[in-house]
Length: 368
Image 1 (cartoon, rainbow, N blue to C red):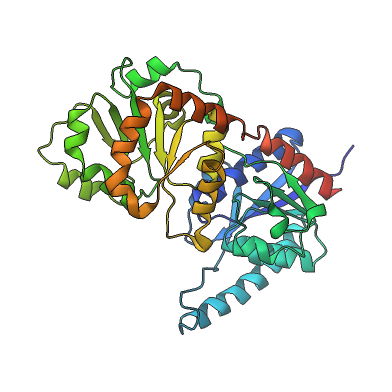
Image 2: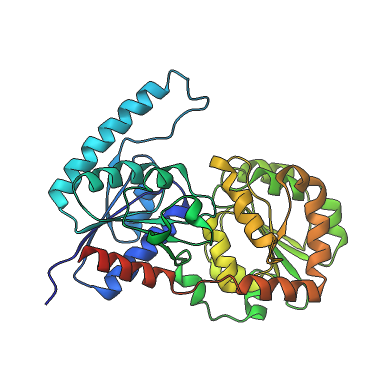
């Protein structure tokens, strides 16, 4: 019988890091029900709520990102917090004694995997983006395995340690059995008409929101139905700006609780270009217009979007051009059946299914 398996999973900061981390943990537990899994995250970040909600224990580190420009005096405290975090990570590792450490990106994984490497614990890095983040690039010489979602990652990691696995996604999305017609009715729409979903992540995306607000006349004049997730951050402001408006083909929500149903209903999606979202579009074969956020490290969302757009697997719109172009383009696209079909077929070709299971097997292999 195999000895008890202990795994540390570290990282977070955004849903794009947390969903894959939890999916990997679930896949490890499915393969090895005896496995003990401990998460290490950054204090005050999303993972400190999301991970316990998924049924796993998490420890927090006082780690945070650098301020720009780098010469800001506040970065002295950031550096001190990083050293504290590394010391705390070493203590957590000594107490838990894991067989393997997994990093999914985000501040905490930098300190945790550096500490794991110094203690001789084998490390696996899961890189979600087509352009490696700073945290994962720092681990290039330390990790034993790099599980990636895009080709050409030899620019960042040793070629002999790279494995193309794709990004794990929320299993619930793949298990949604509702029909397209019933999903459209669930949203309160007419199944005989085309439906566009606009989604800017859990917090929302100002550019996508402004693209709707500036063209409400266009929304009113079309038969196309719009399901608009504003994000909690912008919800109150948008409610105020829509006061008195009666637009039957526009449904507004601050947060989508059942993304499986929302995806099923949508003939076309408008979204930011986070790695996790892109993996979902690929697996579900969703036609999508991508509006990359310009406010992310190393502009990696643009690189993610171009990786699809260059294969005609998505439509790419620059953030600065979106308020003028986005809504008109969406209406044209969703009414073009041949365009929707080719986008769907091309994005499906990029899907890498069963990612969580493949990564989980690599984690177990490394532990031995």
